[in-house]
Picture 1 (cartoon, rainbow, N blue to C red):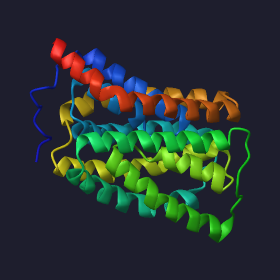
Picture 2 (picture 1 turned 90 degrees about the horizontal axis):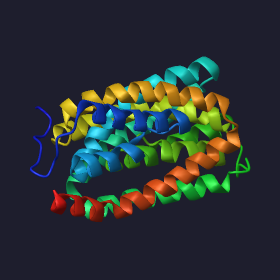
Picture 3 (picture 1 turned 180 degrees about the vertical axis):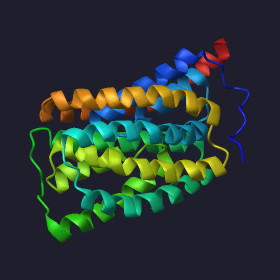
Length: 269
């Protein structure tokens, strides 16, 4: 089954614009350890006129190569705790597929509001740990159990909201597991690869993936993901946490206001 056909409200865009969207999402992905959907989705809805469901599915398809490029850069400078990564992936992959199926039963307005609430929750969690104050420092079996539970939530968020799940995984690892910010971001990106792939597959079956645009935007994502990951190696941990929190707040308000902005653009065009 091919990706869903373009709707009548979607607009054509030059290749450079599509690559630019990928670059923006990729830089954010590599810099703060998320999939990049928090920037990809508003841009695809606002600039390309995509529906919310279609933007979510296409975003997940783009996130796969983006996260892969960023993970490679993190892995060369920081050790990735593969036991935690595997525990997260074990449940996030399954629940990302479940979350993707749930989108067929959620209207776009509600989906947009849910997405914004998820971003606000992530921002609040990161502000709590801004001064590197972890609530818990779990080790061994307890850390693995916490990772499995986090994977369930991250998977549902990923499949439903069209993001990689890093907005759940990074705060959980930093605050509740006591994992270093940069290491947590590297683990998050590694887990995002199979999680986003699982969600994207379900969205594709539902007709929510624009394959042609995903391939073009993905080129920018690859470049941006690697570049953002490189910058993350240079910045202090507290700066990364502040960037994470501020960007989530910015993205939340954009998603809450994007419907009016898109409607205005469509009426004007």
